[in-house]
Image (cartoon, rainbow, N blue to C red; front, side):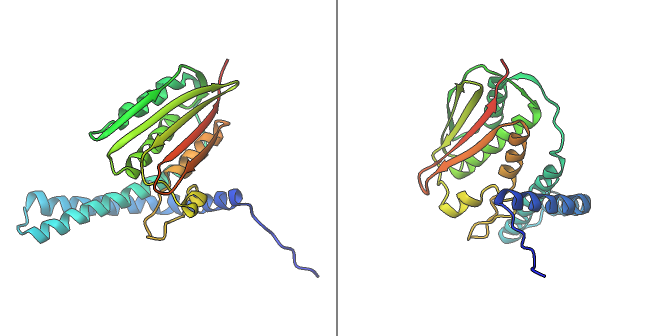
Length: 230
């Protein structure tokens, strides 16, 4: 009997990876967050209460706290992927969502150039704000928290387009091709993170699309398209 062969598209493969991560997160996240919380408390105790002396011990304790916080962020992102199942949609102004995301992301060294319009969409405000905050955070990281981020909105018939452009390091071809893969890491073993994976899920659940244009060393533009309410 001829053996059947099965193939998965890249989108289906990423969906399967997300399911696997979700199963892992639901089982392990509670224990992991408890352990990380305890480690962070111990680091704080040695640094602030016992006040360990010496440059090297304090440097190592600072590094320990930083790494624990990174792990905690990863676990939070894992949990977030499992929670993007249902949306609480309402009629809202996309202008307000984007403006709030920008306000929440303002920091010294970052300049925002905006050209925004008022347009009604049917959306989960909390989740949609999360999307734009994720993308702006990625832009800030790519510029090492120094530079200009452009945020522009356009109305294209029944859709609203939001374009977020940074002056950062951009992505190479491999990173661009795999940036929505929840398990992708770069050759330097530094994780890209799951913010884009979660953002893609949320955008698609709103009937929208997201795409990225980038060039290594020459910035990145993220295009988000969402249906409008007339």
